[in-house]
Length: 359
Ligand SMILES: [Zn+2]
Image (cartoon, rainbow, N blue to C red):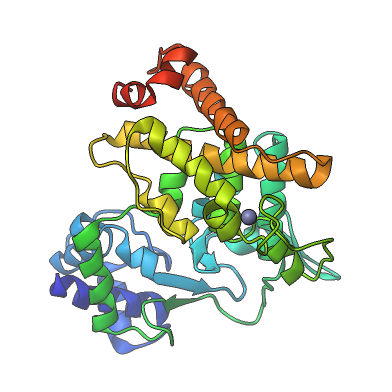
């Protein structure tokens, strides 16, 4: 493993430094592609094969790519969707649905827009018209990249993200490898997008995980005026994502109904990300856990819907209604949106645990 970290140091140097004797030799001898974090073609050199394996395959799969980010200049090297150049994320990871319908896959950043008199203008192209919820997502994407300014004069550069100052060291490469080997934890976003639920709920959760849901605290932070910053359910504490979905007595009762029905006791984490990640039952297989994650996402959507009804339509909060609507929504998705679920609604209401285990 330590060898992997050492080899990665070479890889990183080759990708980021423009000149240097060692690089000229390596480039002429072993490397024929452009400056990319992915490499194709057959390389007969044992050295290159080792390096490639260390960075992209086997136990180190993907870790190198996860640890480097792009500082975009002219945008002619980093790829728009596939490279991490916005807030340390790859856009295709943040917006997989949009990525799947994008005609800009594989393009460099500067190919997804044009220079105009007023400056840089983004121009994204799509395979088909977007659904409403996708358009909302596209707006989020544009908000995210609008602040990014391309600069014709400077070059795209790779930055090592393992240490705060962007400086690469063998130690900082070694640590993520160790933690990857220890827990093999999935990327939180990929586990979200695999959850069995409706797109609208996925979108809401996605915004929650990124801290972008328009809860009162977020609106106030953005300089907007709200009538009252208090949680509309309990009217006692400021509405934050953490309070609304986890800490509020109303939310707690919704989660209790869920756990009681399944006959499980659960340690409730106060952090939304950890709460979401911990929603995993060890006796269930991968597909069953995707359904279980879908339950989390649907409950959160149901809380958010009810909150919006109280805020915008002067409705009243009802814990049981929140939970029952989530139950119905999960069942509709399983029954009509999958091929592996055949239970009647009454079975689902009475024995969700059993239904879940036979998915
Ligand atoms: Zn509350």
